[in-house]
Length: 442
Image (cartoon, rainbow, N blue to C red; front, side, top):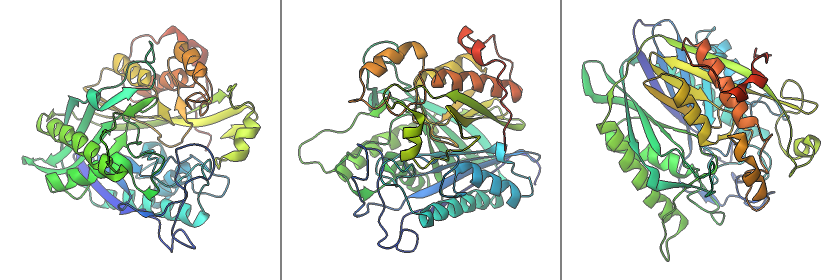
């Protein structure tokens, strides 16, 4: 690898076609209701997997996002999971890019292909295509490494989202929109690529839409690419749990029109953040991936056996062992920048906890990263109000346990320490997991 800070950015098309989604090129869309209710009727715009790779000359970390409803770490159908993808990249690069240095998320579009099986699922042909294109995008970005300087910017975009609940502690949202900008070391105005981190659910288009789309993340990425004259902008969905976009209103507006209006507003904030950016305090690239195990405890769903029968997630160890669900949590560091990968729709308390504990210049939290466990409800103290709203509200339905969000947050503290941060004493709630063996079992 070349010495010094380098960045590579790339994207690949993952739109379903006759070849990748036979026999008609259509897929089930995921996210609304339950069961195979929405078969796609066309493509609103191409959907992509986008990758952002950073190297310090000795170590590399890769961030990628696909525009689907949410991928699992492993699948019953075959080696199509995000863990399989990371392992294949490690092999393909001869260990230059280890699997523990790869964070792959989904933008959670409710107009994206259903990659969970809850809403109809996908054929192996499309899952293989998604895997091939994800590996390709990350390897393309790795091959495209070029000298770069990093900067960070942030703006308040709180008026563009809201919580589904109005009582503490479930009434607060993460209002911050963050950007990581790679530019030429000799000319900060020569932007090479942008990574965008924002918390709104990808649900601007409603359940009546049947056109394939990456929702606002895909439209914003494309708009930013055009506005900044760059090849690739990467949107990594943040802590979107119970956080919904403030959808445009107006009589006669179509779902695609509402999507454009909302995306325009987000893009304007992104460009504001880019214009307000400051140099990042960069340094060595470090990354770790930890494995956590949480006992399934969901009174709405009932038994884990029922859930395992309707989703495509692998139902064998280490991913499922009796009543124990296994998953991964990632922590990465580039100098004074902290990046967290969490395996589901994280509640804002996770981001807030990380910000309070990790003394970073900026904190990026990537949701639905390397796995999809549904809602990561946090803090546990707020769970009773979430449960009381079920099943009309699905947060307690698609949830492993009342403690899963706090468990993920406490595991992130371990990951931060593993990547060199000095943290204050953990909250008392973390004591139950302090002795957990977080070694990756693969």
